[in-house]
Image 1: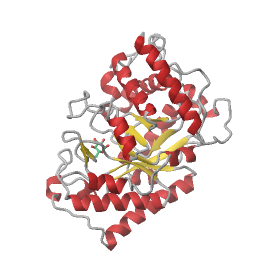
Image 2: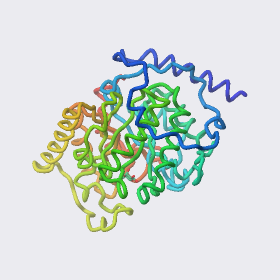
Image 3: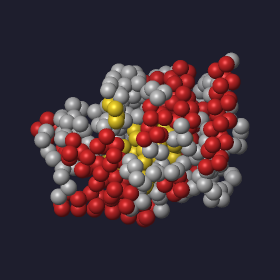
Image 4: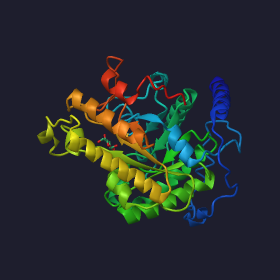
Length: 383
Ligand code: GLC
């Protein structure tokens, strides 16, 4: 009971804070967009939805839509809470989400946290594919802390490995998982964004992914007609994947993303999960002419894609692994972040406190050289 009252107070505060800071949204249609018609019929499942109490007592209709281009700018400088909730179980990869991380990243100057989540490991394998209530409560807590600290929060679906192997076998489950997530969070403020799938690959080629994206978007739109949703290309969410994709439909509330780890042999040298990467150890990045030109060329292409598709673009992951030398990591991170910003692209660094970490959760210290080039303190973000 005490907990409930606390939640109510916390959420009222959040609404007020968000309302005060929200930019003037552009006029939005009030009816469900027509693309909802393309949603597959809800599977005939037992009443799973009614069994799940909603976490936040937001009043119906409180959602004030934010223009996708405006919100892409508001995402500003972000950080991924990686290796926490997308591990098979939180903590298995050495890191759990801690309450103090939220004020810490906010005070350091970040505007957004992207939260990778392995939903597929916390839901029934069979219909009705119910997401475990205690896992939902954990994510509720993450969202609540992000909002209380004035951070945008991107909720994604990460490492759905079964889907990458067997699209048809997992399609319904994927859609029903998102139906549960979207329904549960439908009344949360627009600073909560949904990203349906991290780095589509395997069974998902361009075509099958775009079809699945349209389906999952239609599912999300049944309960969240105007929330901004993150679209990515296939091919592991790379820039190439995005360049091969096209805008999935005319839904105005989409923000495109790509992940940037080029040159891969530099950013992933010694990465235990990348076969052969130990041969790359010692690769440096000092920002010579060709190295800089390659980054510029890539950022230009991302921007051109955004213009051609009339979509804002957000670089949802970029970073260099800690096996690279620190000077090179700092130089690369600085150059990529500035190249993106110079073209109006916002970003989220991969990641907070693990192998690419900008923070050391053991010594409780920021990696100052990396932090300083991510957040240039002299230009306070002032969101
Ligand atoms: C992707 C992967 C993640 C990995 C990161 C850097 O987000 O899903 O597991 O750590 O890229 O390689």
